[in-house]
Image (cartoon, one colour):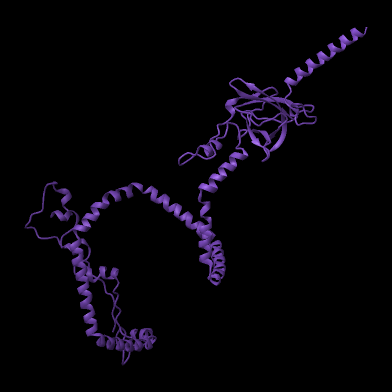
Length: 419
């Protein structure tokens, strides 16, 4: 009986040992076990998957982010065809992932913890992924180096700057790029800049203090002139449009410019002679003015006195001119005068153009085309009698020996009188 119990105990220990060894071969650490209360493990959660080139540093239960907000966690990580990494993503209820999204592995902290970020496409989503869908590898964009070397490549630095696909730069890569900026950039010259600025400001404190209020005034004036500056910019824009519309003309002017310059160069001697002549004229004018300057001053002084006299007589001058044509009587007094010892007749002259055309000018034969040209107008211009020419053949012409036809004259009527 004891021997049977001992055999059963040994069999039980053997089975337990084999079980422990078998389970130990598939154990990936405590972090591989499901964490109670983790994101994406509650009721209503669902799973999708994504394929990325490398999942180095990514662990189970790592957070999954959309727009920097935690929306789930990573389930398991396995090897996909082509030696890529397949990541199972557990999402909380109500989380929607737009079609065309891709995933990126990023650093959660500088200590090295990582997360998986779902980057949705820009614009309006055309649809959303369903449970069990997979984000394929081609959806992951290619990431270039942090900084492309412009000089001889440095192996250690350039290798550190290589960023794997679907991965944000790591802390080491950021620090490596920063070291390139600090060591190979112009930051080392910052001390020289500070020293030179110190030399400029040293001993000029008062001037700098006085400059600051002036700069404030300048900025204020510029701010007050904002509308004018905007209008000036708009004017320049209109000018640019106008100049652009005249592009063919400008091109023609540029093509003809050398010919114009050659023509001006050929006429250079004429321009020089003209300028010399202008110079001689200026010299002669200057000599004349110098020789007669005293006379000119005397004439100007005398003219000033004459103009002063005219200005003083200004109000009386128009009144005196009224008496010129009606001397010795004023015009407004003539209708009230009575014929007697001083006035025994009166005469009215009508010198208007219509009246002269009907009277004096007609009597001397200078009215109309006949009076101006000395020949009858119209049909009479061919030497024909205007009254009988309609009854004569068309080719008949007036005899050259025939007397000229006089212009019609009317006896002008009486235009005035007195006794």
